[in-house]
Length: 151
Length: 419
Image 1: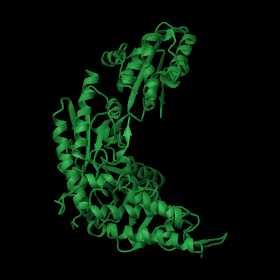
Image 2: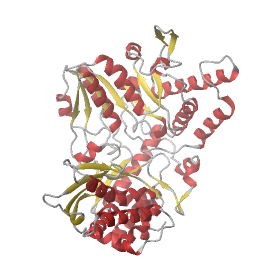
Image 3: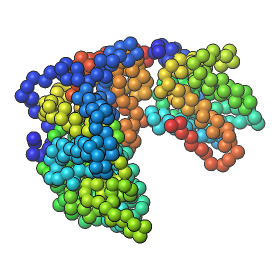
Image 4: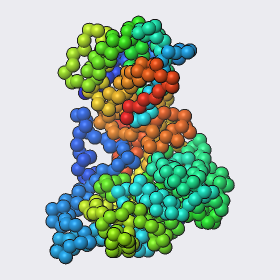
Protein backbone atom coordinates (compact mmCIF):
# COMPACT_ATOMS: atom_id res chain seq x y z
CA UNK A 1 0.00 0.00 0.00
CA UNK A 2 1.77 3.10 -1.22
CA UNK A 3 0.27 6.55 -0.91
CA UNK A 4 2.08 7.62 -4.06
CA UNK A 5 0.12 4.98 -5.98
CA UNK A 6 -3.12 6.56 -4.87
CA UNK A 7 -2.25 10.21 -5.07
CA UNK A 8 -0.45 10.21 -8.41
CA UNK A 9 0.41 13.50 -10.04
CA UNK A 10 -2.41 13.12 -12.55
CA UNK A 11 -4.91 12.65 -9.71
CA UNK A 12 -3.59 15.60 -7.72
CA UNK A 13 -3.61 17.76 -10.82
CA UNK A 14 -7.19 16.89 -11.76
CA UNK A 15 -8.25 17.44 -8.15
CA UNK A 16 -6.69 20.86 -8.08
CA UNK A 17 -7.81 21.87 -11.57
CA UNK A 18 -10.85 19.78 -12.42
CA UNK A 19 -11.64 19.76 -16.16
CA UNK A 20 -15.16 20.24 -17.48
CA UNK A 21 -16.29 21.62 -14.16
CA UNK A 22 -19.68 23.32 -14.14
CA UNK A 23 -23.09 22.72 -15.61
CA UNK A 24 -24.54 22.54 -19.09
CA UNK A 25 -27.63 24.66 -19.59
CA UNK A 26 -30.57 22.60 -20.79
CA UNK A 27 -28.78 19.25 -20.76
CA UNK A 28 -30.19 16.17 -22.46
CA UNK A 29 -29.29 14.04 -19.47
CA UNK A 30 -28.60 14.84 -15.86
CA UNK A 31 -28.04 12.89 -12.64
CA UNK A 32 -26.93 13.50 -9.07
CA UNK A 33 -24.53 11.15 -7.37
CA UNK A 34 -24.10 10.92 -3.61
CA UNK A 35 -21.72 8.93 -1.48
CA UNK A 36 -23.21 9.28 2.01
CA UNK A 37 -20.18 7.69 3.63
CA UNK A 38 -17.90 10.60 2.86
CA UNK A 39 -20.38 13.25 1.82
CA UNK A 40 -19.25 13.31 -1.81
CA UNK A 41 -21.84 14.84 -4.09
CA UNK A 42 -21.68 15.42 -7.80
CA UNK A 43 -24.01 16.47 -10.55
CA UNK A 44 -23.43 15.42 -14.14
CA UNK A 45 -25.02 17.21 -17.05
CA UNK A 46 -24.71 15.85 -20.54
CA UNK A 47 -25.39 17.11 -24.03
CA UNK A 48 -26.10 14.28 -26.44
CA UNK A 49 -25.71 14.16 -30.19
CA UNK A 50 -27.76 11.13 -31.06
CA UNK A 51 -25.87 8.32 -29.45
CA UNK A 52 -22.79 10.38 -28.78
CA UNK A 53 -21.68 12.36 -25.73
CA UNK A 54 -21.28 15.76 -27.28
CA UNK A 55 -20.48 17.52 -24.05
CA UNK A 56 -20.37 16.64 -20.39
CA UNK A 57 -19.78 18.68 -17.26
CA UNK A 58 -19.69 17.88 -13.59
CA UNK A 59 -20.13 19.87 -10.47
CA UNK A 60 -19.95 19.03 -6.82
CA UNK A 61 -17.88 18.59 -3.71
CA UNK A 62 -15.81 15.56 -3.04
CA UNK A 63 -12.51 14.09 -2.04
CA UNK A 64 -9.49 14.18 -4.34
CA UNK A 65 -10.21 10.72 -5.71
CA UNK A 66 -13.83 11.42 -6.57
CA UNK A 67 -13.09 14.85 -8.05
CA UNK A 68 -10.14 13.60 -10.12
CA UNK A 69 -12.05 10.53 -11.26
CA UNK A 70 -14.97 12.66 -12.45
CA UNK A 71 -12.66 15.09 -14.19
CA UNK A 72 -10.77 12.27 -15.94
CA UNK A 73 -14.03 10.60 -16.89
CA UNK A 74 -15.44 13.70 -18.56
CA UNK A 75 -12.28 14.07 -20.61
CA UNK A 76 -12.26 10.41 -21.57
CA UNK A 77 -15.85 10.04 -22.71
CA UNK A 78 -16.42 13.28 -24.56
CA UNK A 79 -17.14 12.43 -28.20
CA UNK A 80 -17.68 8.73 -27.52
CA UNK A 81 -20.86 6.81 -28.30
CA UNK A 82 -22.71 4.75 -25.73
CA UNK A 83 -21.13 1.46 -26.68
CA UNK A 84 -17.66 2.94 -26.26
CA UNK A 85 -18.68 4.52 -22.94
CA UNK A 86 -20.00 1.16 -21.72
CA UNK A 87 -16.77 -0.51 -22.68
CA UNK A 88 -14.74 2.12 -20.88
CA UNK A 89 -16.95 1.82 -17.81
CA UNK A 90 -16.30 -1.90 -17.77
CA UNK A 91 -12.55 -1.38 -18.07
CA UNK A 92 -12.49 1.21 -15.28
CA UNK A 93 -14.54 -1.08 -13.06
CA UNK A 94 -12.10 -3.92 -13.64
CA UNK A 95 -9.19 -1.61 -12.96
CA UNK A 96 -10.71 -0.47 -9.66
CA UNK A 97 -11.71 -3.86 -8.34
CA UNK A 98 -9.45 -6.59 -9.70
CA UNK A 99 -6.06 -6.87 -8.08
CA UNK A 100 -4.29 -8.33 -11.10
CA UNK A 101 -5.83 -6.09 -13.74
CA UNK A 102 -3.32 -4.54 -16.11
CA UNK A 103 -4.54 -1.17 -17.36
CA UNK A 104 -5.52 -1.53 -21.00
CA UNK A 105 -4.08 1.07 -23.37
CA UNK A 106 -7.56 2.45 -24.19
CA UNK A 107 -7.81 3.73 -20.61
CA UNK A 108 -5.24 6.43 -21.27
CA UNK A 109 -5.01 8.83 -18.33
CA UNK A 110 -7.71 6.86 -16.48
CA UNK A 111 -4.99 4.31 -15.75
CA UNK A 112 -3.85 6.71 -13.03
CA UNK A 113 -6.74 5.30 -10.97
CA UNK A 114 -5.12 1.88 -10.73
CA UNK A 115 -3.71 2.66 -7.28
CA UNK A 116 -7.21 3.01 -5.84
CA UNK A 117 -7.78 -0.74 -5.61
CA UNK A 118 -5.13 -0.95 -2.88
CA UNK A 119 -7.43 1.24 -0.80
CA UNK A 120 -10.76 -0.62 -0.66
CA UNK A 121 -12.43 2.17 1.32
CA UNK A 122 -11.80 4.52 -1.60
CA UNK A 123 -13.08 2.46 -4.53
CA UNK A 124 -16.54 4.01 -4.16
CA UNK A 125 -15.03 7.48 -4.37
CA UNK A 126 -13.57 6.66 -7.79
CA UNK A 127 -16.62 4.84 -9.11
CA UNK A 128 -19.27 7.36 -8.00
CA UNK A 129 -19.03 9.44 -11.18
CA UNK A 130 -19.27 6.36 -13.39
CA UNK A 131 -22.38 5.08 -11.63
CA UNK A 132 -23.87 8.55 -11.88
CA UNK A 133 -23.05 8.61 -15.60
CA UNK A 134 -24.80 5.29 -16.07
CA UNK A 135 -27.86 6.57 -14.25
CA UNK A 136 -27.90 9.74 -16.34
CA UNK A 137 -27.65 7.87 -19.63
CA UNK A 138 -30.17 5.21 -18.67
CA UNK A 139 -32.66 7.82 -17.62
CA UNK A 140 -31.96 10.26 -20.42
CA UNK A 141 -35.36 9.55 -21.93
CA UNK A 142 -37.18 9.97 -18.64
CA UNK A 143 -38.29 13.42 -17.57
CA UNK A 144 -37.22 13.58 -13.95
CA UNK A 145 -33.57 13.87 -12.98
CA UNK A 146 -32.29 10.99 -10.91
CA UNK A 147 -30.19 10.63 -7.82
CA UNK A 148 -27.98 7.65 -7.23
CA UNK A 149 -26.08 6.72 -4.13
CA UNK A 150 -23.07 4.53 -3.56
CA UNK A 151 -23.50 3.30 -0.04
CA UNK B 1 -18.64 12.33 42.36
CA UNK B 2 -19.76 15.70 41.09
CA UNK B 3 -23.27 16.31 42.30
CA UNK B 4 -24.21 18.16 39.15
CA UNK B 5 -22.58 15.43 37.07
CA UNK B 6 -20.87 17.96 34.86
CA UNK B 7 -17.88 16.64 32.98
CA UNK B 8 -15.31 18.86 34.54
CA UNK B 9 -11.81 17.53 34.85
CA UNK B 10 -10.25 17.43 38.26
CA UNK B 11 -6.70 16.52 39.16
CA UNK B 12 -6.16 12.88 39.91
CA UNK B 13 -4.76 12.03 43.33
CA UNK B 14 -2.45 9.36 41.87
CA UNK B 15 -0.06 10.07 39.03
CA UNK B 16 -1.73 8.82 35.88
CA UNK B 17 0.40 6.03 34.42
CA UNK B 18 -0.75 5.89 30.82
CA UNK B 19 1.95 3.37 29.83
CA UNK B 20 0.72 0.93 32.44
CA UNK B 21 -2.84 1.43 31.23
CA UNK B 22 -1.79 0.83 27.63
CA UNK B 23 -0.40 -2.57 28.58
CA UNK B 24 -3.96 -3.59 29.50
CA UNK B 25 -5.06 -3.12 25.88
CA UNK B 26 -3.55 -5.85 23.68
CA UNK B 27 -4.63 -4.21 20.42
CA UNK B 28 -2.56 -1.12 21.10
CA UNK B 29 0.65 -3.05 20.54
CA UNK B 30 -0.25 -4.08 17.00
CA UNK B 31 1.01 -2.50 13.83
CA UNK B 32 -0.94 -1.06 10.92
CA UNK B 33 0.72 -0.79 7.51
CA UNK B 34 4.06 -1.52 9.17
CA UNK B 35 3.69 1.27 11.70
CA UNK B 36 2.68 1.25 15.32
CA UNK B 37 -1.05 1.78 15.62
CA UNK B 38 -2.11 5.21 16.82
CA UNK B 39 -5.76 4.72 17.64
CA UNK B 40 -7.57 8.05 17.75
CA UNK B 41 -11.08 6.79 17.02
CA UNK B 42 -12.32 5.88 20.47
CA UNK B 43 -15.39 8.09 20.10
CA UNK B 44 -16.52 5.67 17.38
CA UNK B 45 -15.61 2.62 19.45
CA UNK B 46 -13.10 2.28 22.25
CA UNK B 47 -10.75 -0.67 22.56
CA UNK B 48 -11.12 -3.36 25.22
CA UNK B 49 -8.71 -4.05 28.04
CA UNK B 50 -7.59 -7.59 28.80
CA UNK B 51 -9.78 -7.50 31.92
CA UNK B 52 -12.90 -7.21 29.75
CA UNK B 53 -11.68 -9.77 27.23
CA UNK B 54 -10.95 -12.20 30.08
CA UNK B 55 -14.32 -11.70 31.76
CA UNK B 56 -16.17 -12.44 28.51
CA UNK B 57 -13.86 -15.36 27.84
CA UNK B 58 -14.47 -16.85 31.30
CA UNK B 59 -18.20 -16.53 30.88
CA UNK B 60 -18.11 -18.18 27.46
CA UNK B 61 -15.81 -20.97 28.60
CA UNK B 62 -17.30 -21.85 31.96
CA UNK B 63 -20.68 -20.28 32.69
CA UNK B 64 -22.76 -19.96 29.55
CA UNK B 65 -26.33 -21.23 29.38
CA UNK B 66 -29.63 -19.48 28.85
CA UNK B 67 -30.78 -17.18 31.63
CA UNK B 68 -33.97 -17.08 33.70
CA UNK B 69 -35.00 -20.54 32.50
CA UNK B 70 -33.17 -23.64 33.62
CA UNK B 71 -32.94 -25.15 37.05
CA UNK B 72 -29.52 -26.49 36.20
CA UNK B 73 -26.30 -25.08 37.57
CA UNK B 74 -25.08 -23.37 34.42
CA UNK B 75 -28.35 -21.55 33.83
CA UNK B 76 -28.23 -20.29 37.38
CA UNK B 77 -24.61 -19.18 37.03
CA UNK B 78 -25.40 -17.39 33.79
CA UNK B 79 -28.42 -15.73 35.40
CA UNK B 80 -26.30 -14.61 38.34
CA UNK B 81 -23.67 -13.21 36.01
CA UNK B 82 -26.24 -11.40 33.91
CA UNK B 83 -28.24 -10.00 36.83
CA UNK B 84 -24.98 -9.23 38.62
CA UNK B 85 -24.00 -7.09 35.64
CA UNK B 86 -27.30 -5.29 35.98
CA UNK B 87 -26.59 -4.43 39.58
CA UNK B 88 -23.06 -3.37 38.64
CA UNK B 89 -24.61 -1.01 36.10
CA UNK B 90 -27.09 0.31 38.65
CA UNK B 91 -24.20 1.21 40.93
CA UNK B 92 -22.19 2.73 38.06
CA UNK B 93 -24.87 5.31 37.29
CA UNK B 94 -26.41 5.40 40.78
CA UNK B 95 -29.88 4.26 39.81
CA UNK B 96 -32.24 3.44 42.68
CA UNK B 97 -33.09 -0.05 41.57
CA UNK B 98 -32.11 -2.73 39.07
CA UNK B 99 -35.70 -2.45 37.85
CA UNK B 100 -34.57 0.77 36.21
CA UNK B 101 -31.75 -0.83 34.22
CA UNK B 102 -32.86 -2.21 30.86
CA UNK B 103 -30.23 -3.95 28.77
CA UNK B 104 -30.42 -3.01 25.10
CA UNK B 105 -28.24 -3.51 22.03
CA UNK B 106 -26.89 -0.02 22.54
CA UNK B 107 -27.78 3.65 22.78
CA UNK B 108 -29.73 3.58 19.52
CA UNK B 109 -31.99 0.81 20.74
CA UNK B 110 -32.51 2.61 24.06
CA UNK B 111 -33.77 5.71 22.25
CA UNK B 112 -35.96 3.65 19.93
CA UNK B 113 -37.42 1.86 22.92
CA UNK B 114 -38.50 5.14 24.52
CA UNK B 115 -39.81 6.43 21.19
CA UNK B 116 -41.86 3.34 20.43
CA UNK B 117 -43.03 2.50 23.93
CA UNK B 118 -43.36 5.77 25.80
CA UNK B 119 -43.82 8.34 23.03
CA UNK B 120 -45.97 6.22 20.77
CA UNK B 121 -48.43 5.39 23.55
CA UNK B 122 -48.48 8.89 25.06
CA UNK B 123 -48.16 11.49 22.35
CA UNK B 124 -50.57 12.77 19.74
CA UNK B 125 -51.44 15.77 17.60
CA UNK B 126 -50.21 19.03 19.08
CA UNK B 127 -47.57 17.42 21.26
CA UNK B 128 -43.93 18.32 20.72
CA UNK B 129 -40.57 16.64 21.16
CA UNK B 130 -37.63 19.02 21.46
CA UNK B 131 -34.11 17.98 20.49
CA UNK B 132 -30.95 20.03 19.81
CA UNK B 133 -29.22 20.81 16.53
CA UNK B 134 -26.14 18.79 17.45
CA UNK B 135 -27.76 15.40 17.88
CA UNK B 136 -26.51 12.15 16.39
CA UNK B 137 -28.90 10.60 13.88
CA UNK B 138 -29.85 8.10 16.60
CA UNK B 139 -31.41 10.94 18.58
CA UNK B 140 -33.20 12.41 15.55
CA UNK B 141 -34.60 9.62 13.41
CA UNK B 142 -36.46 7.61 16.12
CA UNK B 143 -38.34 10.81 17.01
CA UNK B 144 -39.12 11.53 13.37
CA UNK B 145 -40.55 8.03 13.04
CA UNK B 146 -42.74 8.29 16.11
CA UNK B 147 -43.86 11.84 15.27
CA UNK B 148 -45.04 10.54 11.92
CA UNK B 149 -46.88 7.70 13.64
CA UNK B 150 -48.72 9.81 16.21
CA UNK B 151 -48.91 13.23 14.56
CA UNK B 152 -46.61 14.95 17.05
CA UNK B 153 -44.07 17.61 16.04
CA UNK B 154 -40.29 17.47 16.28
CA UNK B 155 -38.64 20.76 17.23
CA UNK B 156 -34.96 21.56 17.12
CA UNK B 157 -33.13 23.98 19.41
CA UNK B 158 -30.30 25.81 17.61
CA UNK B 159 -26.56 25.85 18.28
CA UNK B 160 -24.11 28.68 17.72
CA UNK B 161 -20.92 28.80 15.66
CA UNK B 162 -18.89 27.38 18.52
CA UNK B 163 -21.13 24.35 18.63
CA UNK B 164 -22.86 25.30 21.87
CA UNK B 165 -26.56 25.05 22.50
CA UNK B 166 -28.14 28.52 22.50
CA UNK B 167 -29.77 28.01 25.84
CA UNK B 168 -32.16 30.96 25.75
CA UNK B 169 -33.59 29.87 22.44
CA UNK B 170 -33.80 26.30 23.66
CA UNK B 171 -35.73 27.45 26.70
CA UNK B 172 -37.95 29.68 24.58
CA UNK B 173 -39.01 26.67 22.53
CA UNK B 174 -40.33 24.87 25.58
CA UNK B 175 -44.03 25.13 26.27
CA UNK B 176 -46.89 23.11 27.68
CA UNK B 177 -46.94 21.31 24.32
CA UNK B 178 -43.42 19.97 24.90
CA UNK B 179 -43.73 16.46 26.23
CA UNK B 180 -40.12 15.33 25.89
CA UNK B 181 -36.70 16.89 25.61
CA UNK B 182 -34.10 14.55 24.10
CA UNK B 183 -30.51 15.79 24.16
CA UNK B 184 -27.00 14.49 23.94
CA UNK B 185 -24.85 14.79 27.05
CA UNK B 186 -21.78 15.16 24.80
CA UNK B 187 -21.81 15.81 21.04
CA UNK B 188 -20.09 13.05 19.09
CA UNK B 189 -19.28 15.28 16.13
CA UNK B 190 -18.07 18.37 18.01
CA UNK B 191 -17.18 17.25 21.51
CA UNK B 192 -19.44 19.89 23.09
CA UNK B 193 -20.45 19.06 26.64
CA UNK B 194 -24.05 20.17 27.04
CA UNK B 195 -25.36 21.74 30.24
CA UNK B 196 -27.43 18.63 30.71
CA UNK B 197 -28.53 19.30 34.27
CA UNK B 198 -29.90 22.71 33.30
CA UNK B 199 -31.57 21.17 30.25
CA UNK B 200 -33.28 18.55 32.40
CA UNK B 201 -34.33 21.11 34.99
CA UNK B 202 -35.98 23.49 32.52
CA UNK B 203 -37.64 20.56 30.76
CA UNK B 204 -39.15 19.52 34.07
CA UNK B 205 -40.18 23.09 34.82
CA UNK B 206 -42.31 22.96 31.68
CA UNK B 207 -43.73 19.57 32.53
CA UNK B 208 -41.68 17.71 29.93
CA UNK B 209 -39.66 14.55 30.46
CA UNK B 210 -35.96 14.47 29.62
CA UNK B 211 -34.04 11.76 27.81
CA UNK B 212 -30.25 11.95 27.69
CA UNK B 213 -28.18 10.33 24.94
CA UNK B 214 -25.17 9.50 27.04
CA UNK B 215 -23.20 7.52 24.45
CA UNK B 216 -20.32 9.98 24.32
CA UNK B 217 -20.46 11.07 27.95
CA UNK B 218 -20.31 7.76 29.76
CA UNK B 219 -16.57 7.09 29.21
CA UNK B 220 -15.58 10.61 30.23
CA UNK B 221 -17.62 11.48 33.28
CA UNK B 222 -19.22 10.08 36.36
CA UNK B 223 -22.91 9.94 35.57
CA UNK B 224 -25.35 10.00 38.46
CA UNK B 225 -28.88 9.63 37.12
CA UNK B 226 -30.42 10.66 40.44
CA UNK B 227 -28.33 13.80 40.75
CA UNK B 228 -29.12 14.64 37.13
CA UNK B 229 -32.80 13.89 37.73
CA UNK B 230 -32.91 12.33 34.25
CA UNK B 231 -36.05 10.47 33.24
CA UNK B 232 -34.18 8.34 30.70
CA UNK B 233 -30.44 7.99 30.22
CA UNK B 234 -29.01 5.67 27.61
CA UNK B 235 -25.52 4.56 26.57
CA UNK B 236 -23.51 1.82 24.88
CA UNK B 237 -20.88 -0.48 26.36
CA UNK B 238 -18.51 -0.31 23.40
CA UNK B 239 -17.69 3.33 24.00
CA UNK B 240 -16.85 2.45 27.61
CA UNK B 241 -14.15 -0.15 26.83
CA UNK B 242 -16.81 -2.87 26.77
CA UNK B 243 -18.23 -5.13 24.04
CA UNK B 244 -20.46 -4.16 21.14
CA UNK B 245 -24.10 -5.21 21.01
CA UNK B 246 -24.90 -4.28 24.59
CA UNK B 247 -26.09 -1.03 26.07
CA UNK B 248 -28.23 0.33 28.82
CA UNK B 249 -31.44 2.28 29.08
CA UNK B 250 -31.98 3.77 32.49
CA UNK B 251 -35.58 4.80 33.06
CA UNK B 252 -37.37 6.11 36.09
CA UNK B 253 -39.25 3.16 37.54
CA UNK B 254 -42.68 4.79 37.62
CA UNK B 255 -42.35 5.65 33.93
CA UNK B 256 -41.15 2.20 32.93
CA UNK B 257 -43.93 0.59 34.95
CA UNK B 258 -46.57 2.54 33.05
CA UNK B 259 -45.03 1.96 29.63
CA UNK B 260 -46.22 -0.84 27.34
CA UNK B 261 -43.72 -3.46 26.15
CA UNK B 262 -42.12 -2.61 22.83
CA UNK B 263 -41.01 -6.04 21.66
CA UNK B 264 -42.86 -9.24 22.38
CA UNK B 265 -41.35 -12.65 22.90
CA UNK B 266 -39.87 -14.91 25.48
CA UNK B 267 -38.69 -13.64 28.86
CA UNK B 268 -40.83 -10.50 28.72
CA UNK B 269 -44.08 -12.31 29.57
CA UNK B 270 -45.66 -13.66 32.72
CA UNK B 271 -48.31 -15.76 31.03
CA UNK B 272 -49.33 -16.38 27.46
CA UNK B 273 -52.56 -17.72 26.07
CA UNK B 274 -53.84 -17.24 22.55
CA UNK B 275 -56.38 -14.81 23.93
CA UNK B 276 -54.15 -12.67 26.11
CA UNK B 277 -50.67 -12.37 27.52
CA UNK B 278 -49.48 -10.59 30.63
CA UNK B 279 -46.14 -8.95 31.11
CA UNK B 280 -43.18 -9.75 33.25
CA UNK B 281 -41.93 -7.38 35.94
CA UNK B 282 -39.34 -4.73 35.34
CA UNK B 283 -36.77 -4.77 33.89
CA UNK B 284 -37.52 -7.97 31.96
CA UNK B 285 -40.74 -6.55 30.49
CA UNK B 286 -38.48 -4.71 28.06
CA UNK B 287 -36.07 -7.55 27.33
CA UNK B 288 -37.80 -9.90 24.92
CA UNK B 289 -35.78 -12.88 23.77
CA UNK B 290 -32.49 -14.29 24.99
CA UNK B 291 -30.37 -11.31 25.99
CA UNK B 292 -26.67 -10.64 25.39
CA UNK B 293 -25.29 -12.25 28.53
CA UNK B 294 -21.61 -12.25 27.63
CA UNK B 295 -22.00 -8.62 26.57
CA UNK B 296 -23.46 -7.74 29.96
CA UNK B 297 -20.60 -9.54 31.69
CA UNK B 298 -18.15 -7.59 29.54
CA UNK B 299 -19.93 -4.33 30.35
CA UNK B 300 -19.69 -5.02 34.07
CA UNK B 301 -15.99 -5.78 33.72
CA UNK B 302 -15.53 -2.55 31.77
CA UNK B 303 -17.19 -0.61 34.59
CA UNK B 304 -14.89 -2.27 37.11
CA UNK B 305 -11.95 -1.34 34.92
CA UNK B 306 -12.98 2.28 34.51
CA UNK B 307 -13.61 2.62 38.24
CA UNK B 308 -10.20 1.12 38.97
CA UNK B 309 -8.63 3.98 36.99
CA UNK B 310 -11.10 6.55 38.28
CA UNK B 311 -13.30 8.52 35.91
CA UNK B 312 -12.00 11.81 37.32
CA UNK B 313 -8.43 10.74 36.55
CA UNK B 314 -9.41 9.63 33.04
CA UNK B 315 -11.24 12.92 32.42
CA UNK B 316 -8.26 14.95 33.63
CA UNK B 317 -5.88 12.97 31.41
CA UNK B 318 -8.12 13.39 28.38
CA UNK B 319 -8.67 17.06 29.03
CA UNK B 320 -4.92 17.69 29.12
CA UNK B 321 -4.60 15.84 25.80
CA UNK B 322 -7.44 17.83 24.31
CA UNK B 323 -5.81 21.13 25.27
CA UNK B 324 -2.44 19.98 23.97
CA UNK B 325 -3.85 18.65 20.69
CA UNK B 326 -5.97 21.77 20.15
CA UNK B 327 -2.90 23.99 20.57
CA UNK B 328 -0.76 21.80 18.28
CA UNK B 329 -3.38 21.53 15.55
CA UNK B 330 -3.85 25.29 15.52
CA UNK B 331 -0.18 25.60 14.55
CA UNK B 332 -0.76 23.72 11.29
CA UNK B 333 -1.67 26.12 8.48
CA UNK B 334 -5.11 25.60 6.99
CA UNK B 335 -6.56 23.59 9.85
CA UNK B 336 -9.87 24.73 11.17
CA UNK B 337 -11.27 23.19 14.31
CA UNK B 338 -15.01 22.58 14.03
CA UNK B 339 -16.58 22.83 17.45
CA UNK B 340 -14.92 25.24 19.84
CA UNK B 341 -17.26 25.09 22.81
CA UNK B 342 -15.93 26.23 26.15
CA UNK B 343 -16.56 22.79 27.61
CA UNK B 344 -15.52 19.87 25.43
CA UNK B 345 -14.91 16.18 25.87
CA UNK B 346 -11.97 14.44 24.23
CA UNK B 347 -12.99 15.04 20.62
CA UNK B 348 -11.43 17.31 17.99
CA UNK B 349 -13.24 17.70 14.70
CA UNK B 350 -11.37 19.61 12.03
CA UNK B 351 -11.02 20.41 8.36
CA UNK B 352 -7.98 21.30 6.23
CA UNK B 353 -8.28 23.94 3.53
CA UNK B 354 -8.52 22.36 0.09
CA UNK B 355 -8.25 18.79 1.33
CA UNK B 356 -11.25 16.57 1.80
CA UNK B 357 -11.42 14.76 5.18
CA UNK B 358 -11.54 11.43 3.38
CA UNK B 359 -8.12 12.11 1.87
CA UNK B 360 -6.83 13.16 5.28
CA UNK B 361 -8.10 9.87 6.70
CA UNK B 362 -6.41 7.76 4.03
CA UNK B 363 -3.05 9.48 4.38
CA UNK B 364 -3.19 9.29 8.18
CA UNK B 365 -4.07 5.61 7.95
CA UNK B 366 -0.97 4.96 5.86
CA UNK B 367 0.96 6.49 8.77
CA UNK B 368 -0.77 4.13 11.21
CA UNK B 369 -3.01 6.89 12.61
CA UNK B 370 -6.68 5.87 12.83
CA UNK B 371 -9.17 8.74 12.89
CA UNK B 372 -12.79 9.04 11.85
CA UNK B 373 -13.71 10.96 8.73
CA UNK B 374 -17.17 11.68 7.42
CA UNK B 375 -20.38 13.17 8.74
CA UNK B 376 -20.23 11.28 12.06
CA UNK B 377 -23.90 10.35 11.76
CA UNK B 378 -24.68 14.00 12.34
CA UNK B 379 -25.50 15.34 8.88
CA UNK B 380 -27.43 18.34 10.25
CA UNK B 381 -24.29 19.37 12.17
CA UNK B 382 -22.25 19.17 8.95
CA UNK B 383 -24.88 21.25 7.16
CA UNK B 384 -24.81 23.83 9.93
CA UNK B 385 -21.05 24.27 9.60
CA UNK B 386 -21.35 24.05 5.79
CA UNK B 387 -18.87 21.21 5.45
CA UNK B 388 -19.55 17.88 3.75
CA UNK B 389 -17.56 16.08 6.41
CA UNK B 390 -14.87 16.56 9.01
CA UNK B 391 -11.88 14.63 10.25
CA UNK B 392 -12.22 13.71 13.90
CA UNK B 393 -9.56 12.62 16.37
CA UNK B 394 -10.82 11.36 19.71
CA UNK B 395 -8.95 10.42 22.86
CA UNK B 396 -9.41 7.83 25.55
CA UNK B 397 -7.82 6.68 28.80
CA UNK B 398 -4.96 5.08 26.83
CA UNK B 399 -4.10 7.96 24.50
CA UNK B 400 -0.66 9.57 24.88
CA UNK B 401 0.89 12.93 24.05
CA UNK B 402 3.25 11.04 21.79
CA UNK B 403 0.25 9.88 19.78
CA UNK B 404 -0.95 13.46 19.46
CA UNK B 405 2.52 14.30 18.13
CA UNK B 406 2.19 11.50 15.58
CA UNK B 407 -1.18 12.88 14.53
CA UNK B 408 0.37 16.30 14.01
CA UNK B 409 3.30 14.84 12.03
CA UNK B 410 0.90 12.87 9.86
CA UNK B 411 -1.19 15.98 9.20
CA UNK B 412 1.92 17.81 8.04
CA UNK B 413 2.49 14.86 5.71
CA UNK B 414 -1.04 15.33 4.34
CA UNK B 415 -0.13 18.89 3.43
CA UNK B 416 3.04 17.65 1.73
CA UNK B 417 1.16 15.08 -0.38
CA UNK B 418 -1.25 17.71 -1.60
CA UNK B 419 1.44 20.29 -2.15
